Length: 268
Image 1: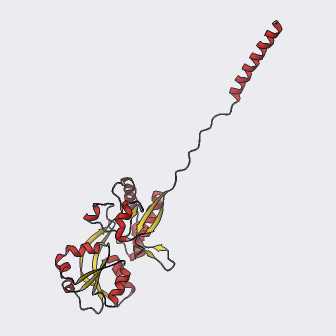
Image 2 (image 1 turned 90 degrees about the horizontal axis):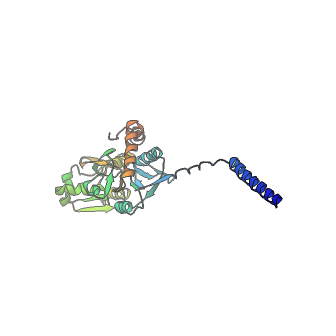
Image 3 (image 1 turned 60 degrees about the horizontal axis):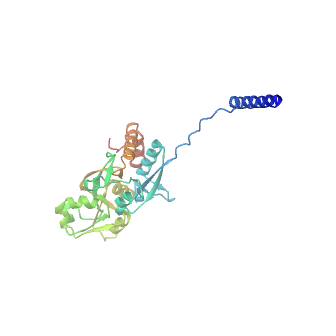
């Protein structure tokens, strides 16, 4: 009996020692390595027929002043920028329905748009200019009376003309087009008497076809371009604003401007 008790005590002691040794020899716990943060994607809505702000080159690639600015902003934010061509006339709906995150394509800041869109500070100044054919007798806004004037549907040119009530009421017709290229064709063949368009776009086209078009000295006022997000997207807006401010201060925006316009026209 004593022998059995002794053997039992020895077995218990051995088991205790094994547990103790096991605790000492157990591998140290390692700290879990955090997964890298997912790359943020920003979808930019644009009109892909709006040179030199955003358009397709001969290889069908999206290029332009605003394209380059958005890409540079994406690098600074550590984000992937995807460009999505949209119906510019439905841009507010595309934004609010979250099909795009940002509107960045010569977007004019207006009081009406501020009700639906949150804007950065202006980065470019623009005018709504009047283009006629070089042979046209029209020299002033007053001479647009009784004429057919073209605009891009959904553009700020419409609002600019409507603000000039005297001129707007004197027109025979304000004809709206899906894009400015089609409108310029109609101007060239005589279906339009004049076209009202963003200056950056108008001068880009007229420079490419010297002797065909003429820009009147009078215009429909000065306006500013800004980048737009949803009203409640304040965090993204703050990041975009910081990126744009940085591009202005370090000369990156000026370099992009010189590439597309031959000089720095960025609004400081």
